[in-house]
Length: 409
Image (cartoon, rainbow, N blue to C red; front, side, top):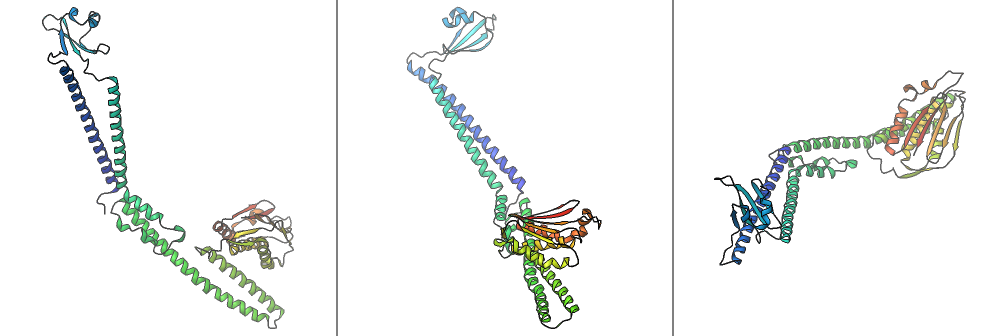
C-alpha cells in the first residue's frame, strides 16, 4: 500500500537521487583538495629532509632586479605588472609586489623544484581522478535506475497483470487477475480499478453471449427441424397443384429462416468451434447457392452463367463462406430484371466475381437505383462482417451498366 501518489513518489525519488549524487560529488572534491594539500606539504617536507641539517629556503624576496636569479633578470627589466607569474622551465613561481616606502617593485620567488610532481605522476593522478569520476557516475546511474524502478513499480505490476490476460479468450474470472486492492489510492490504483471493472463487464458480456448462443442454437433450430420434418411428411401425401406450390413456398421460407439463423449465430459467436482451418472447395458452395436461390428467377427471363476458371480450395469457415456467397447470389438474383442479360459468376484461383446488369433501355433502371440502401440492404453488411471475421476481402463495384461483387480470400 502506497501512501503517496505516483507523481509525488517520482519527484521524491528524483530528489533523493540528486541529493545522494551531490553529497557524493562534494565528498569526492573535498577529498581531492585535502589530498592535494597533503601531497604538496609532504613533497616540501621531503625536499627539506634531503638537505638536512642545512634547510633550504624555497621562498626568497628580492627588491632589486640585479639580485634576482639570472634567468629572471631579463624578464624583470620589462617592468612587469603586479601579479603572479609561473616559469615552468625554471620551476619558479614569482609574485610581483610594490614596496610601501618607495613604490619600487619587489619580487617574491618560490622555488618549486622537487616539490611539484613529475609529469608521469600527473598522468597517474589524472587517471585516478578519471576512474573515481567514472565510478561515481556509474554508481549514480545505478542508483537512479534502482530508485526510479521502485518508484514506478506499481505501474510495472499493473502492466504485467494486464499482459497475463488472454484478451482473445476471456474467462469470467480474468478480471480478478488485476487485483486492484494491491494498489493504493493513487493514479495507478484508480487505473487498476477502472481496468478491473471494465474487464468484469466484458467477462460478464462474454458469459452472456456464450449462454445465449448455446441456448439460441438449440431453441431456434428445433422449430426449424420440426417444420422440415412436417414438410417431408406432407410431400408423401397426395396434394393438389396449389398445395404443392404453397408447400414449395413454405420450404423455401424455412430454408431461408435456417440460413438466417445460422448466419446470425455465426456472427454472434465469439469463437466458432475451431472451424477456421477447415479446407473446402468453392465451386460446390457456389452451385448450391445458385440452386437455393434459383426460385427468384422463376418469372424472369434470365440465365446464370457459371465459369469455373479455377477450382480453388479455401482454408477457413465453410459455413461463413456459404452464407456470404448465398447473400451475394440472392442480391444478384433479386435486383436483376427480365431481359437485362445473363448473370455471370466467375470462379478464379483466389477470387469470386458475381456480375449482373443494372441498366436496360426497356426498364429505365439505373445503377444508382440498384445500389441504393433499399436495393442491397442488410445482406451486404453481413457479407462485409463475415469477411472481416474470416480474413477475406469484399468489394462492390457499381457503374452505369453493371454491378460486380468481388469476394477474395
